[in-house]
Amino acid sequence: MPLFKDTGGDPRELVATILALYGALGDAACGNPRGFAARKAGAAVAFAEAAGVDAGTRDALAFAATLHAVGAIGNAQGGDAPVLAARRCAQIAALPPATAELVRAQAEHWDGTGFPDQLRWDAVPFPAQLLLLAEIVLRSTGEDEALERVNAESGRALAPPVAAAYAAWALHGGGAVEPVVLPYAALDAGACDPGALFELVAVTVARAVGAS
Image (tube, rainbow, N blue to C red; front, side, top):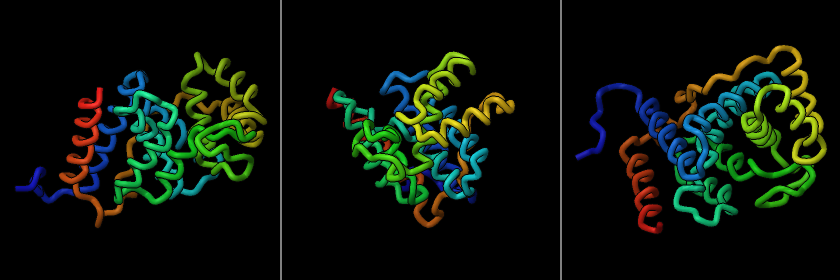
């Protein structure tokens, strides 16, 4: 008996809902505020749109930001969280292909001091820099502090063009960033099995609970 009954709707929409739940579990595991992943996704997509990033990459960013912390589930060490999160994303065939790579590279720094691979300069995927930018901005208290922190990281964690793009966005009234609505139409319909995904998430959480 299938876990989810086929009601004739688009299974991608249900898969997106389960992915949002997975992201929320990741937030809870690493102590992020409620809704942080959704806001991070909204910020990353907004910055990407302002930077002229193509729609397909923006879709991958939305899912990568939503799932950015799933590596924290059942992970007491924490340091390898991007690697584990990327591995878990790679298990979900419905996701846009770039998602796992962006999740893995989310903590890489432009100057090579990030992790897990110490990528440097142009080796750091530009969209992954937008994930890091969103993280910095959301963890700031207000727009002034965000701009100050982004400027301080220019040439360090952030590529100078990324920092400059944020400054231009902020100074030209970028405005409040809304939580993202996941672009479920970007999921691979042929790989969307809500029951299998729910079971994967449930097993991940059960193992985490068992290991704690």
